[in-house]
Amino acid sequence: MSLTLHPGAVPLATFETLYWTGAAAKIDASFHPGVEKAAARIAEIAGGDAPVYGINTASANSPASASPPKT
Image (tube, one colour):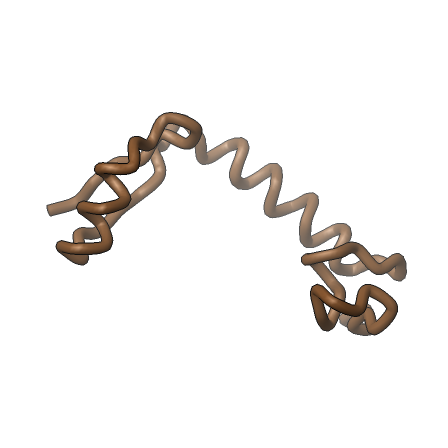
């Protein structure tokens, strides 16, 4: 069984099915361009010098302890 997810319109029952059955899930193909655009933006941010919470910080509790940019 494989479920196709439509971001922003996934009912709780679908998440329950995924959890309890271990069914495979995939994002509807119409959302792929947006996912790719977001991934490119995150890669750009992660490669920068500025600390950005949740992307290149070492800890959610300490944004001052940013991970160094990858070279």
